[in-house]
Length: 346
Ligand code: F1P
Image 1 (tube, rainbow, N blue to C red):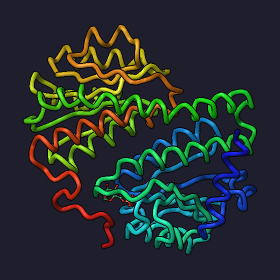
Image 2 (image 1 turned 45 degrees about the vertical axis):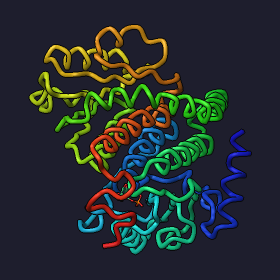
Image 3 (image 1 turned 135 degrees about the vertical axis):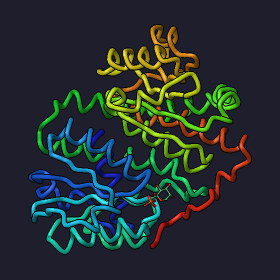
């Protein structure tokens, strides 16, 4: 399965100018470090990739906001591989960050949606996400496509480095093949989420919490809400809540908790209890069949079970729908939010 996936990535790349990861297999295999540079939603996809690459391929990964990286004096070594992620392929900060890294001898790998875009052209190699044009300014399907490609890269690296059992890799690939059907199922939650949106459409603040692979999803959920509904929202690692954000929780605070069944499930149960103890209004994203969190949360959204590393592909869907419905109910233009451009080129 991995071979066929790799074949597909190679075939796509050959036609479309970015050469493939395979040509640089040895450098990837021996990389001391991978630095991911991106902005916004793409940065969140990069964070998921950090967790996956470190978990499966055991290569140290740093995820940097391109908008900061380009202006500071980062340590970049020749053996570094820099992965630039961008939906538009035109984000000026990401382009500048990769050019800085390139000038210091790093190998630049791109994950872009738009074929022939400036970032794609400036890379040494890469993979196109082929998510089709994002009609709206705020990235949604690009996130799913980026996480999918980055998951495949993480698995390829794990295979090349021998850091994951073949049976485990095969299992992951089989899980991957089931993702489209699970995403379809998550999209059927639309009406349910519309009803929840009606209740919270006038909220002025939201908190999003997640742990592990769902932490970047919490950040992404908060960003989507800010971008298209103009509601102030913050995403936090759930375990970080006690270090400050917990002070914000009261009976008026909606708290979206991504609490799917994974290795940190017991911990997230405690986090939900902490929020409930302070009367926060919990909207929990749970795995189908969960019987514990539904007893504690005020609202429950059930998504299909999946391997925890692939869960962001599913758990992000209800959050995107929540932002969408709230924005529409508030009369916001979801495709052209104020102050936001499709490609931030300055
Ligand atoms: C990065 C980004 C998007 C966001 C908005 C502004 O774009 O921050 O994530 O939704 O469109 O730009 P890109 O580099 O992924 O095209």
